[in-house]
Image (cartoon, rainbow, N blue to C red; front, side):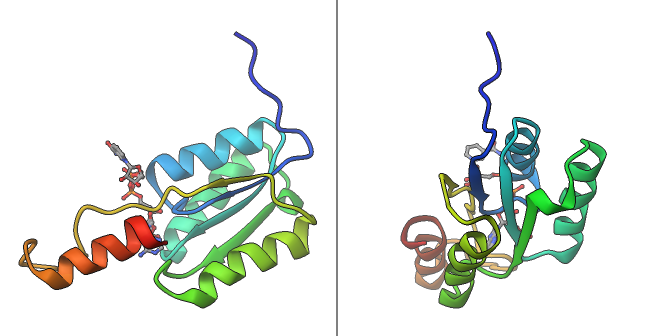
Length: 123
Ligand SMILES: NC(=O)c1ccc[n+]([C@@H]2O[C@H](COP(=O)([O-])OP(=O)(O)OC[C@H]3O[C@@H](n4cnc5c(N)ncnc54)[C@H](OP(=O)(O)O)[C@@H]3O)[C@@H](O)[C@H]2O)c1
């Protein structure tokens, strides 16, 4: 099966500082897309940048947004900065997802449930 081309397309991948999102960002970029990568970890974002560079992707085709999806300003930055840098948005991979709040000792607490709902469903 031939690989689909994303030449000229613009893709936002939330949570691409590790895991599935990171792998997706590299695949989309290798398929020709300009990508906006995202996460909270500077180290993770640098790692994704490095992997993109090693895959031969030029810096002009990558934009990085750092911050929590629970912050409205970060969601706005993802959209505004992508449009400002690449002129359009074709695909949003809403990949951020968690099964527990970091550091939460009581996974059954209502605070934990609210946080998970906010990150996984509302955002
Ligand atoms: N792995 C599996 O087996 C599996 C199976 C089914 C579904 N999924 C789903 O696939 C998605 C990715 O899973 P994964 O295993 O690749 O997870 P992962 O390695 O833990 O990656 C999660 C990503 O989301 C980011 N993230 C988490 N909370 C965030 C927040 N509040 N604000 C901003 N970014 C946040 C993390 O960035 P930072 O750490 O930099 O903040 C990271 O880039 C999730 O939605 C998960 O539910 C995974």
